[in-house]
Length: 67
Image 1 (cartoon, helix red, strand yellow):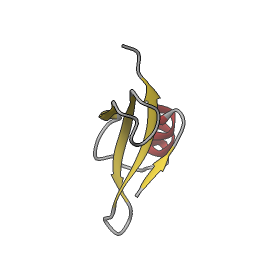
Image 2: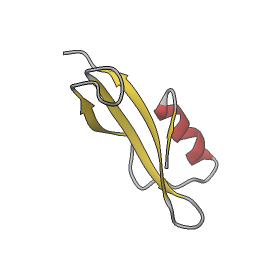
Image 3: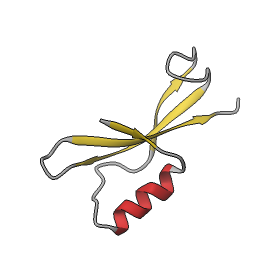
């Protein structure tokens, strides 16, 4: 399950301060060239972690990228 957030770096930092361990740092995972999932040209940034029952969860933030 993914949760959309604004300012993903801040959210990750806040959750780490509460003891959440992330499997990845914030990273670009997909550039939506055609706008299939949002605005054309946006890049999806995500950070993955696990819940207490070992389900993979993620924070996600689409960002407008400049060419």
